Image (cartoon, rainbow, N blue to C red; front, side, top):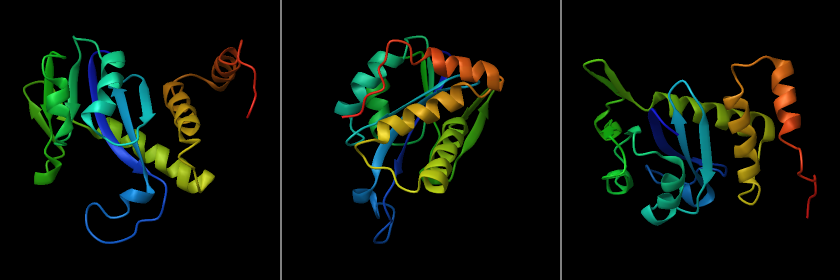
Length: 171
């Protein structure tokens, strides 16, 4: 991924139990997404949002010339140090959701928009997604998002071409 890339995490599935900011995270599966502004998305189910789990994802998908935008989660500054051109942070904890620095807009609204589509699809259509199959749902929503700017015929062709050489087996 290149250009301006937004990175964020969310939690999918389960019922919220308890009170406070961390309520219900035990029942939910963490999902990390990288979104190029005006471009593609890649999302991943991780066991926990830790530097150990995110390092291989960022190593594989970020180029050194990327400009990265994140929220103020503590895991990102450590991981992105010396890895990208710039790392800008919006401080959600201070109720900051966007700001402008010259001609640059600093926000994570694009990745948040992807998460809203993902969650509405899961909760509204699928109703329940197990952690075991979550990566399959993420692949589907990544495909939908990445193919959002092409017409239905091209999208169908792209989906069919994506199955070439892949037997449809479930075990």
